[in-house]
Amino acid sequence: MQAALSVEKLTKKFGEFTAVNGVSFDVEDGKFFSILGPSGCGKTTLLRMIAGFYEPTEGLIRIRDEDMTAVEPNKRPVNLVFQHLALFPMMNVYENIAFGLKRRRESDSRIKEKVGSILERVGLPEHSKKKIDQLSGGQKQRIAIARCLVLEPSVLLLDEPLGALDAKLREHMKIELKKLQSMVGTTFVYITHDQSEAMVMSDHVAVMNAGQFEQIGTPQDLYHNPNSSFVAQFVGNNNKLPVKVHKDEGGAFLARYLDGKDYQVDGTPDLSEGDEYDMFIRPEAVLINPSTSQSIPNTMNCDVKAILFDGGNSQLLVIPEGADQELIVTLPQNKQFDDIKAKDTIRIGWNPGTAVCFPKTELKIYDEA
Ligand SMILES: Nc1ncnc2c1ncn2[C@@H]1O[C@H](COP(=O)(O)OP(=O)(O)O)[C@@H](O)[C@H]1O
Ligand SMILES: [Mg+2]
Image (tube, rainbow, N blue to C red):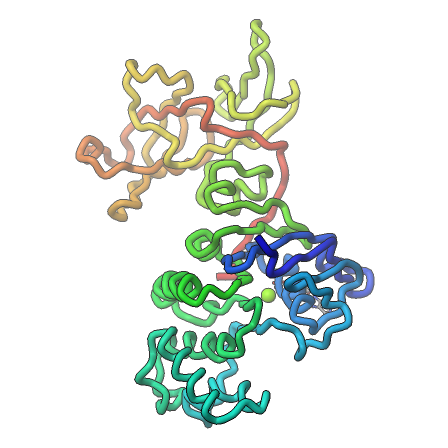
């Protein structure tokens, strides 16, 4: 499969400060690739280098096997969709979309054909005469993307394009965007600080932290097999239990938690005795009141602090006995758990294989939402 975009050891320094640090990745033709990371980690800088607005300090960018080093931004086969859509308010929808084609001096008949076809593809065929301020937020979004797609870029770059929309429209648009991308088949490189956007839409996601890629994988890979504490915390919900590892008489590792008790750990092969780790357990891996027939080796008593009812996404907030820490437990919606109330004491448990440990790190993970 041909790579639509190939980036090799890309670095950008602003004076002494390294904003992007040795990033490498390939995006296959026709795929939806996201770069996910907290605000300030270097996402926009990376995208601007690909678009040609910043010159890399080091590294190589190839689009469809062509080295982009000497290629001017306006000659690159890429288009950039910004958070603030920058549609022309004085022009109608048709004129907005036709703008780039006119600049390329395409014939009126070709322009008409192309604009008609792209409006069809983004699901707004009846809107060509509308003014921009007559469109809803979601429609503006689609027009902004149509205006780029009509130029038939090899790669469409999107810089947090849903950032300006309200939460409800964002939920809707992330599904729309995914459908749109699979319909048009253009390669998308999408940057966001919102893990759920990245997970829902993408074929592959790169998790970025402080100028570097921590991990690249499918959403499922990142969720089930994070390779660092950062990825475990940033992708999906997770419980982070501080533990110290030691060995039992048989040589098996045990994790001592804040409650002073020991728990089995199977999920991580190379632990070292005496070290401190963060042990991660997904909320849905936690079993409520496991029966003895399930033979779950790791169990603890907890006080129920709150029930966060949200239909199929309901959760319990619990505090383990002897530990001053809140844990999240997925609350399955079968009637079995209906009588659990705040202040109850329940037993929770998990299989050692579902917990994973990473060396203890003090990470600040914040969200700009
Ligand atoms: N032109 C610039 N000059 C100096 N520093 C910059 C410039 N552009 C970005 N930075 C810095 O680089 C870092 C990454 O910024 P940016 O790529 O915009 O992050 P993100 O898009 O992930 O929020 C930030 O610390 C930012 O202040
Ligand atoms: Mg940015």
